[in-house]
Length: 437
Image (tube, rainbow, N blue to C red; front, side, top):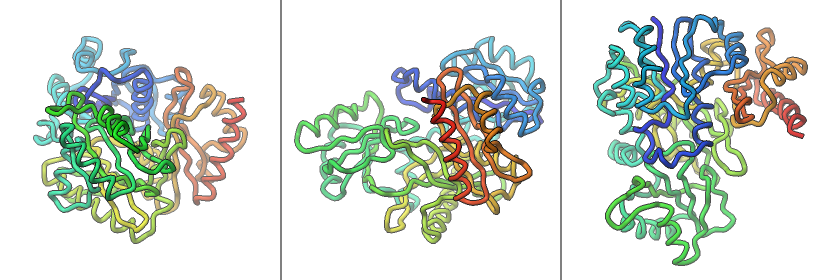
């Protein structure tokens, strides 16, 4: 049956303060949502904020076999798919002429806004828990800590804070017991709102946009200001304050929680970070720097968490995130109950290599990479033997293209070994560096 894909990242139900989003945020959202093109089949429809560049669509079609003239991309050319825009004649009106009740509904996140939208089109979604906002509950960092702790999962030392009276004594206690703590907004994405707080000026706050070194009362006041809490409420949303583990490895697994049967682990890996700021920049599948025993323990607990989510009524894909410390302990810090940052990567690998791609290949990705126009880059990759080669079963494809608007793209490297993948990345970096000069 045809599928309706909805690129509804950063919706009114996912983000506490949409009014604080910047143009860079909007560009990042669109960048991520273009990845959904890789998941499409002939006959599918995709709703995005802005159109998909023709060169990128052709690149994807070359590898997936879809026909660009047999898919439907509805893009109103806006910054964000707000609920008001989704219910406009431009989107809902056009879809009513195309979509029938037999279509499968595939939103990026199945929040209440997506549920209302699906019902307007007569689509049956199937999960009462999700329809009532269950995915939003799981995506809340505050709710996640309570659920995870109650079910016996290891979460970092800390507490969700609603008021400044929650935060101040907790901050003092945690900094007495730990080298650093991290402050995270309840509903934020991609490291936005994350601040590492430490007494060590030399500490590297990987995973946060900023680090605050506290040395006196004035620094504590700065933390309170950043948290945005008052003595009585949280006007900018609640925050989580928890122990930060320096030199840890950030890991994830993507799982599928079906309506029937056991949850399935689809893929897993570790996060790659930039240097400045030290936030998420890509993924490595499988993880490179996690001991086998620690990875086995983490994935076992992650599957237990998937079964717990399933028992609540959650259905669909989810990414379960944790950090593994130097002792090999896994500390669970959030769940993304939606399509994740590896969904398209796993699909690309399955498309190019096959369903058992992890038996023979490794994958690395990097996004927000400065690059020339897509056509020029693809030509350069082909000339240098870097583009995906189906005979050699190695090479590079472009997972998302925004070179026309922001000059950025995301690449994916599939190779037989880590060394081969690193060599391909080094050669590509050389090509991109020449472009930047």
